[in-house]
Image (cartoon, rainbow, N blue to C red; front, side):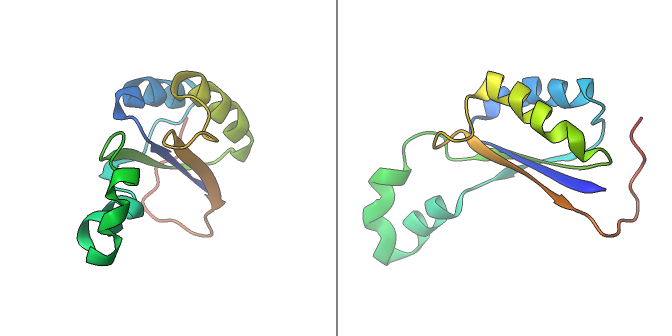
Length: 112
């Protein structure tokens, strides 16, 4: 099992990304609204408020998708498809994606 995490810098891409995941058999997951650390630091810690002008461009929130998947081999193809919609994850503000191994899990329904 593997935990797939995708952070989308632009929430308007969420529906299309979820469609791609479903088309590749990723039928379960959790989507939450998240905020980058830089934004919080720039707004909450006085010594960093001078950085606000660098951080306040773009959207204040991200959408983060978590899903436990069985087949790690789909990662590269999924990311390729998602980047066609969102742009390259190598570009700032687009988002990030990663996958890590899960040693044990409880309550996970097998994907079909």
